Length: 373
Image 1: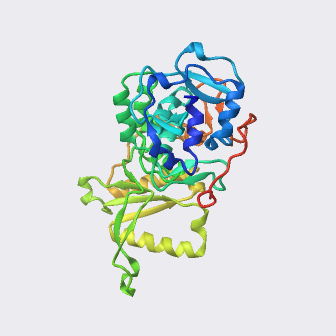
Image 2: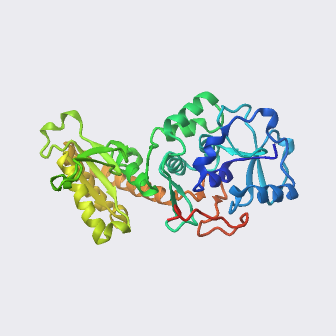
Image 3: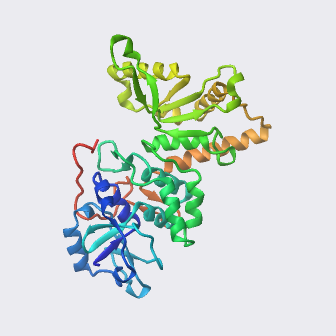
């Protein structure tokens, strides 16, 4: 094998609009086929010219070699030592002689560079309906299906056994979420769900973008009787909430982007809210200005607890002050975790597309017009 790409290079490949197709070639690379040494400058140039998925990749490229003896200093590549063994389907073939790490393996590899908050956001991305793509108009590409899931990453670690980074990744998996639709959905979810010790509101989230069957508002006009709604975030009332002042079965929270503010979309959103309300699901909406206002989220969390029949936390003045500091800290950490900066090591690792990136890349990347939105 000529090269086995890893870490941020594999991540950039997986973030492409067409990476779902690549996963159909997930495979197993026997130990004897893992490159014994880093490629030379001429070999790197040949590989990047022949592997289209490397267009726009951040330099130096990260790759795996089988032993420390195969590493050398290079401006074009950084080599990492291979694990003693890899589970099946931990590699993706780019060409017959070039492979990159699978989503599950990338999550483990990035424990080296990512803080736990950055790793949490990365796992949400790999398990979600989006990929961070700086050259796209919105900064994201949308996926029909996630690249992996929290359970698949967990099973991967079970099969792999204890190696460096597994304990850290397992801690993150306890809070990671499947089916997130955007980084902001993930941030909102974690701020609601994490416990107070971590700076969250300790309100259990039961699902992201889960389907809910509702009665269609236009059924009286002859439209189909039912449709499926998928709220960004659903918070469920506990069994005892029947005695709550406003006993909703659940609360939905939707993060609204700019497109929701056009007149036609606003009408659709009204239908959506009313259809959910008819199912005893109260739907709240927040925009960026609400998310960034901690006092506003404090108020919203109180409303949600009231709607679900959950008790308010009783805190001393000192405990309230400490919680406020932790909420601000969590908000700041989540905001910094943009998927392009990895700050677990000094100096931090900065990827192409970050505003402060001043390095070099492989050629110029392109996106499919259909998904680069």
